[in-house]
Length: 141
Image 1 (cartoon, one colour):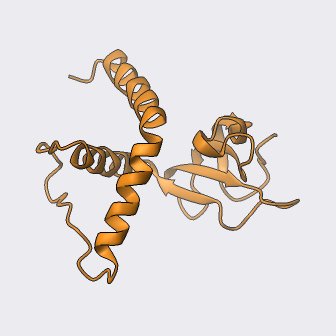
Image 2: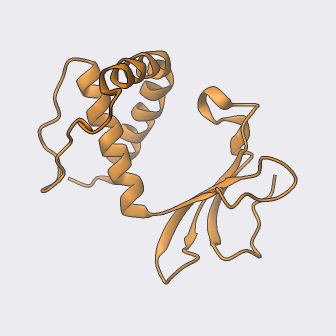
């Protein structure tokens, strides 16, 4: 499915037909594409998940600045490490991960996430291995 180019976010690079590879939702996803382009609300670069649950592009499509996508990736990796009995210590300055103590069902939700991360572990590992290889190829060090 072609990602629209007539809306406010201006895609430059796209992954079309993402609904066919969307992790556990593959084949039954409203996320039809991914893009990196020009943000709809300013002169920033952004990543966008294009959602189309019916015949129209959804206002629930998510657009994030690129650094926030990477910060979410760091958070996912740190939480996965915790569930695997490990601890990530080399986080960015000020990036302190804590339990949301105001959550009245914190322990139940932590158990829920632990089960979800376990269920998703093969897909997460697959994607993280790809990310690790790409980072290695970028020769960032």
